[in-house]
Image (cartoon, rainbow, N blue to C red; front, side, top):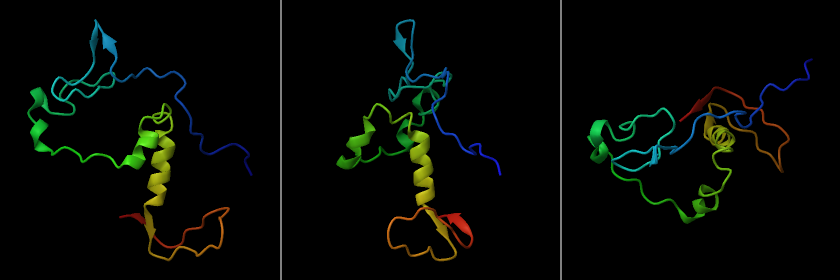
Length: 117
């Protein structure tokens, strides 16, 4: 049996990508909607060339107030992979019933075919 970890989730050791990097005194963002772009993304990535697709999608509704607890948290980006894995796991369904626990489970055993709805 091997003792090494199968999964190791953590920060990228030397990230070279940045949101809204300032170059020549200008912030790298979409000229149409103003969203900060990641290093290497070209304007038009979000709204289409010259903003042609900006009106195609209605604006999102406001986030529920409960989200403010973590939306502006300084570690939200660093923890996004972990949060995505938790959300992804929580949205799984199976063809068999989940076991009925009485208390906090120490592990999870899933039976049947696993799928996302």
